[in-house]
Length: 271
Image (cartoon, rainbow, N blue to C red; front, side, top):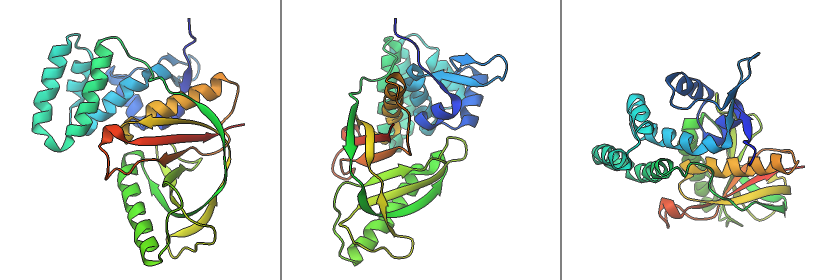
């Protein structure tokens, strides 16, 4: 029998993009209970197999489903009833249809007792350091999408005015301080040829290279927590340690492909 991998609430928060406050609240409501609680300290630990359920909760909340309805849906055994209730809500929220389809697919998997981590192939590779132009953004977990969009807008406007051509796919580095409770600073980066200069909020920098545990996630950005969990689980299982901030490399243009075809490489430096 495979050992259940437990992670502390802070790491689970980072993986699932649910804040620690939200996780504690969902525990109290019985929506997402920790897998284990330390008897002395009261500290919560979660299993990596709980990531899918956490993603479902997060997507349903973003789609406007109430906590009472989420608790009812997760407790519902009949798949047809779940899908019917979600379709009714989807019809009221046409702007959230992409996220609702993701939630439906995940709920179908839960109902069919397929809950667990998606199988990700983990590759260890050497990533060279990279010259980039970057914009720093401080944001909370819920504000990542908006902050990233603003930063990429600033980068592309400057690079267009300075006639600088990208030298690779864009990436985002989440600094070590970034956590699920208060957020933190992230670096939204565009690879450029060496020697490219920045201006104002657009900085020229080198993103460090090194040995990375990596995997590729296919699907909406909101579900990338599954890939984070897979990489972190592999790191622990194989006796390695995280050696720096993780990063996402965006391999597809969201303006050119639908969310279910997004490809994002997750890279985590290791020792």
